[in-house]
Picture 1 (tube, rainbow, N blue to C red):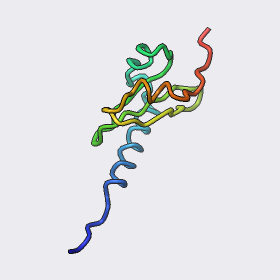
Picture 2: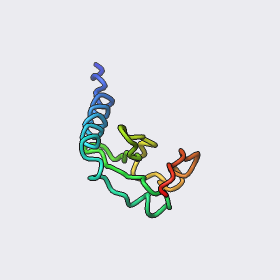
Picture 3: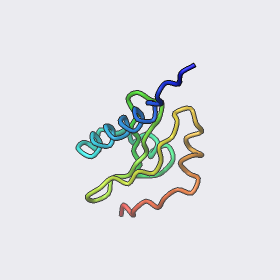
Picture 4: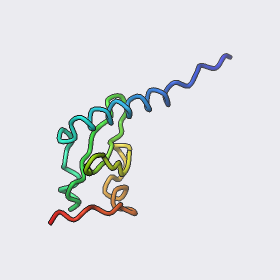
Length: 91
């Protein structure tokens, strides 16, 4: 039996790269839903196109701070609140 090349990882990496390129140009297009629900102002989420994952990030001056890339069926609140990075003051 011959083995097929493992290309899923490459496709996933490409999907993440494409999502980050889009978000770098249009960070406001991501959803603030999880930030609102969890009381984490500034937290946004963006789904990958070909894989069931969400990119969670905060927009910072000059860059995006990616917190997590989590599977959509995971306990997202627990995955986000466990050792959460510090958000900047919004006052």
